Amino acid sequence: MSGVFLGSSVRGAHRLLLHNHIRAPISGVLFQPSTPHARVCTRFPLLSCNIRKPPTRLSATASSVLSSPTVSASAAAAAAAATAAATASASPISSRIGILSWYLGMIQTRPVITKSVTAATIFAAADMFSQQMATLASPRNLDFVRILRMAGYGLLVLGPSLHLWFNFVSRILPKQDIVSTLKKMLLGQTSYGPLMTAVFFSLNAAVQGETISEIFARLKRDLIPTMARGFLYWPMCDFITFKFVPVQLQPLVCNSFSFFWTIYLTYMASTEKVNIPKDSSS
Image (cartoon, rainbow, N blue to C red; front, side, top):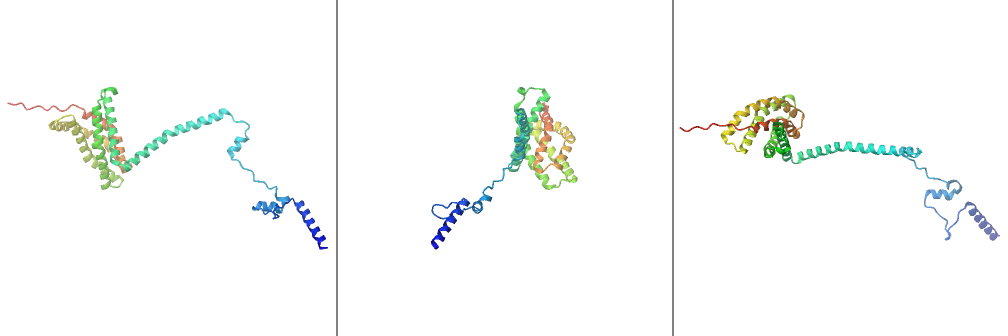
């Protein structure tokens, strides 16, 4: 009786397994899925085995491109040309910003040599322009010795002195209000400006072989008129420099203003020396 009952139970279990489409492995251990999704499929094969992955969503741009029946080749070429033009127009601006960033970094790391090279470049360019204005000479007829002389003055004298001068003024008058700015302008016009003008005329004359008496005669002739014209040009330049420009950039702005002033200075320095009459011996 028990054998018949056991046989009927085995046959019923076999039919149940065939009905649910589940097969046991050869080893006799029922399959135990390792993922939740597989467990759901094992327990409820008729309900959950048809679960699908969510459809992949396309971006708006890709959808618009794929939904359009055709893509015009001319439109694609026009878009590429517009992109290239935008890149080309942005590249000069990026290069200018890169040069400015590099220059500001050099001012922070090597201030004296950077300001000196800047002054030398401006003095050389101003002297070239001055020669072309005075004689209408072609670039082949320029006096390059004179250009090198002016560049050397900017490199060795004016650049380092501007660095020291602006640091000194900002230390004794650190504010940038109107009163402090006017004090800086007065100090520059009565001390630094006349001193550097006299040094410029003297060194330039000495390099050209003039004697001490000839240098003093040149200063007597040219210094006062040059300072008088400087009082008409430099006060507004100094006001802008001291009022609105940071200390580390003040030599650069001053050199920029001095471009036009240097044209006049190099013209005055290139004039003929003063003829000093010799004492006749009795």
